[in-house]
Image 1 (cartoon, rainbow, N blue to C red):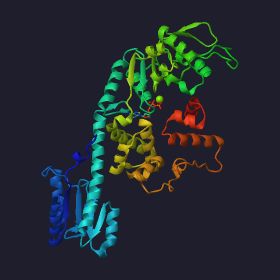
Image 2 (image 1 turned 90 degrees about the vertical axis):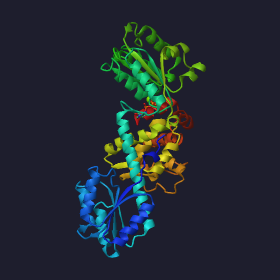
Image 3 (image 1 turned 135 degrees about the vertical axis):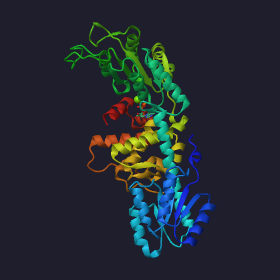
Image 4 (image 1 turned 180 degrees about the vertical axis):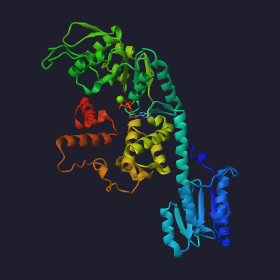
Length: 477
Ligand SMILES: Nc1ncnc2c1ncn2[C@@H]1O[C@H](COP(=O)(O)OP(=O)(O)OP(=O)(O)O)[C@@H](O)[C@H]1O
Ligand SMILES: [Mg+2]
């Protein structure tokens, strides 16, 4: 778990104020509050302090500047300009101003000041502003630290993890990638099975050879058979030309049989033969075709199917030469901040948004949530938050509707257009006039999936349609 407190040290504050009484008052107060405080009475020496902190004469970097607007040798705005032009390092500036110059204070905000306070300074108000700056800052720093660590260590292709157990699994995957052994990847929905299959292939000797993926759950039995094994011309009505199946297409390379647990017993026996003999016949054909392939299979829980007699035990043993079982996200929560960082970066740049980070409350909430849809669900959440964000720090108000209910937040999502279909009141699905039947169907499936936390089997059951249908529809949209 990330210890956010560890990353915090007392903030360093510089006071620039020519009135001795005000400056001393501020100095005493902030000192007592435990901040590290520097003080000066003019612009020139403020810049000097900056250059000495910059050059390393002081070990501290100034985090916050509290500056009077009118100074003997310039104005507080000169500090803002110097920051903007990169002449001094970045710091958050609070401008103190008399009532008469509120207009200039507004100018200061436009120039990039964090906030302004009117004089005489209300010390409690000032402390609140400082606390707000610090809490934003430490989170940004923390995420930047994470980002560096992420780039250095925990990056296996696109797979991100800092969990020792997951790292061990990925290490095994990489170790076996150079062999021709069959691999069975198991794990709940959205845990990264396909991602891991990609990593194995990319690290294998077959990486420049064909890599063919088949989602076995998306196809009906007959279509799956001819997809996998191909068919001869005239094999059945509609088969008006020879079709080379996916096994043939994968010859020399790798085939990924996703959701292999969904295959019928009849097709299972044919696959067993491919595994044992590396040969098969096309549907409607008698010629035996020999191939050289490596098989990677994935399933959510195949053992259960074996025990229920729905999956051949011999095929299971054949597939299960190397078993990689991915861990649910709720059992490796230390990955969550790293994943959030990566997804925020990716979706921000993809959508041209400048989402700088995520507030502490929101991070805490996301750390506590249990992710039935695993990494895919977290990815969807961050994609959603980035899409509806206007930039800056992402907070709880951006969470998708089904999660926001859990935060106990009062804010309603009604203003967010892009959320029309998923943020409605719990039990209703709102479908606007003019929606096509196909779109309406998609909305119903999506909303039901969401309510069922992406549990496809339960969704199929609720909608009284087959699991295969769900997959087919999902693939389509
Ligand atoms: N550790 C990870 N780091 C980064 N992205 C991840 C990680 N794990 C999963 N993802 C992303 O989450 C999404 C779901 O992953 P993937 O499709 O591999 O899961 P799956 O186990 O095959 O799910 P399903 O059973 O639903 O098919 C993908 O977009 C993937 O890139
Ligand atoms: Mg998958």
